[in-house]
Amino acid sequence: MYPGAIAAATPDKPAVIMAGSGRVITYRELDEESNRLAHLFRAAGLRPGDHVAFMLANHPLFLSVAWAAHRSGLYYTAISSRLQTDELAYVVDNCGARIFITSADLADVATSVTAATPRVERRLMLDGVADGFESYEEAVAAQPATPIADECQGVDMLYSSGTTGRPKGVKPALSYEPLTKPGFLVRFIQGLFAPSGDSVYLSPAPLYHAAPLRYCMSFQRLGATVVVMERFDPERYLELVEKYRVTHTQLVPTMFIKMLKLPEETRKAYDVSSLRCAIHAAAPCPVPVKEQMIAWWGPIIHEYYAGTEGNGFLYVNSEDWLRHKGTVGRSLLGTVHILDEDGEELPPGERGTVYFESGVRFEYHGDPDKTRSVQDPKGRGWTTLGDIGHLDEDGFLYLTDRRSYMIISGGVNIYPQEAENVLALHPKVADVAVFGIPDEEMGEQVKAVVEPVTAEDAGPGLEAELIAYCRAHLAHYKCPKSIDFRAELPRHPTGKLYKRLLRDEYWPTNP
Image 1 (cartoon, rainbow, N blue to C red):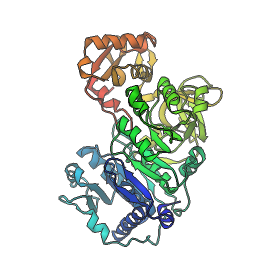
Image 2 (tube, rainbow, N blue to C red; image 1 turned 180 degrees about the vertical axis):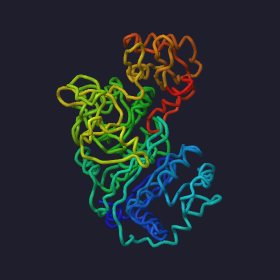
Image 3 (spheres, rainbow, N blue to C red; image 1 turned 90 degrees about the vertical axis):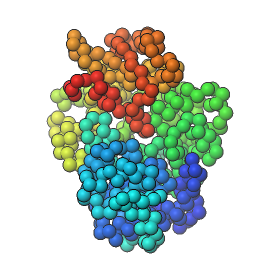
């Protein structure tokens, strides 16, 4: 149930295969590399409950670094490789990292935060060295490949994507349990998706995000092979499924949309029959997109709704989804409550803020106000991720939008996700964001920013076409009054849209 045990049984089995380079990390190499780094942590004075941080792209040793921290009983923060100086300095300093690990390809931004992160005691760099950093390879090679004497479970402390204000670290409690004891996520994965040591898990997203990191490590606990894409490409993804006979994978809806927009002959050219389970989460999936994916891949599409906070977990398989189209699932962890602004519970069918009653405790590191803001108004210990939705009579949850994205125009609540779902399906749209902008008469009006499939299409003609298309599918007040065009939208590789960055351009000051 952890790499050491897998390495003892099948040392030469691939633990990681890098899709681009083809580099293989065996379970023996994963175990020994993580053991050496764990010894380095102990030699540096780190004990269970201390903190390390690492900023890496999808590097061959990414999961080795994560396992080293995990088996050392540490808090570990995997940081987006896209952050700039101020953002990176904030996260590294805020989490209290005593050791910071990065790679030579990120040296410019990594070295720029040294002065602003004085609590870091040691800085290691893979694939090269830079000012203030020592060679990771040389430092780790000097350590033993055997386990440390006081192994115990660590836990990730990951930061929100920063869509509103500064990102916040989600700090769960450490268990200090032995490595042999699996957590609830491993048990859920086993119960829902039935992986085994023969499984091949394809991860197309950045490993620093919660779901890819946790699922890759969970599948490795079971002895599966993890195939890691350095970056997502829709046709390359299909090629990898065929090449490695992938059995399990996790995606986000934008990846579905990009694959569905491939020419039909391209999609049919690849054999995806090995897939037994395609999991998706992280962002709402338009109903027609999921219908098309089930028609293409069969009833192997599984969806869950959860957050980095771990305070709830909802799940739905293809069969149940087809009977409850649009749902994100039914609760497997705790009870879901829909509350109005006063904290009163709403009946099935009525929209409100989604709260979880699960007994799971977490805090936003160093931000008690933020921690209190997600707790229910009546002090019952329920917590929210900030989403709006409703339950049906069977207990299935349907999400409407993020509470912070709701548009209030003339006193009417408008949820931009509805227009986004419609416009995303237009053949000339590669990506879309809908949000509110100032309107002197109505307070806010609906605005769309579109990334067109072909840049030459951008202009008044396509704007009129898209507005008319939206109005043919939705009430006019829900549709954008105007559309701007961009070469690319600021979307996180995991599929999450940085809508605030767009929205702020249209507001003189933050409302």
